[in-house]
Image 1 (tube, rainbow, N blue to C red):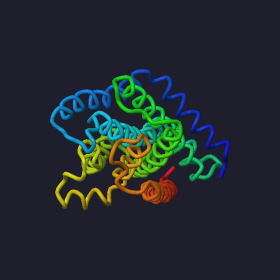
Image 2: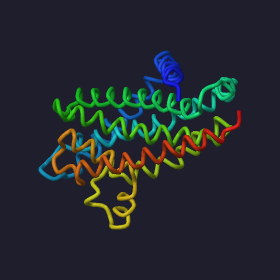
Image 3: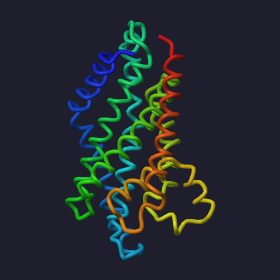
Image 4: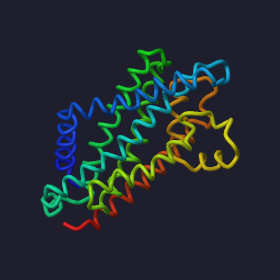
Length: 252
């Protein structure tokens, strides 16, 4: 494993991200519209325990959504690298494929965290509850581990797909159900039993719950924070191992 190769690939992804101004704006605007429109619409008809404002409940869910979509979609960089021949060059280089994958994971994770933090800041400006000093580090921890898991999943999918157009379709087909069954936009306490059962095996549920607990939303976390962390850690480790295996199988 080469630390230099990991760093170079991370730096390349960061430069690519920072130079794409339109990408940064669109990554913030879509979740913000969800936060503003859904927050105001459902906030008027949704009652939460302790009269907690709905915007406080929704913000961690939309931050989780931003990280989920941004992290998984970061795998498309692999497809463009395939198209332009860059992936072939690094696959035949004297660098382990695990190093290549970790460089991509760290790059995608960093950009997803930046997106999540920017969205959290914007939410604070429109009145959402913000975490305290200790809570901020918990928020950062849950953002990081959630992003690592779904960046790794996105890279695993990208390693088996050749068409950049097909990739977003496959990803959306997979992650949209994960988002809507995670309790991101409605309390699971009001959900039917079958939906609660699905939510309990959905890793996004534990990421959103951990973010709510870290921010201090009334009535949360629903699960102990250590359980939220443990589930996400196991999921992320499994996705890293899956991604590493599929990267080893990828043809140069």
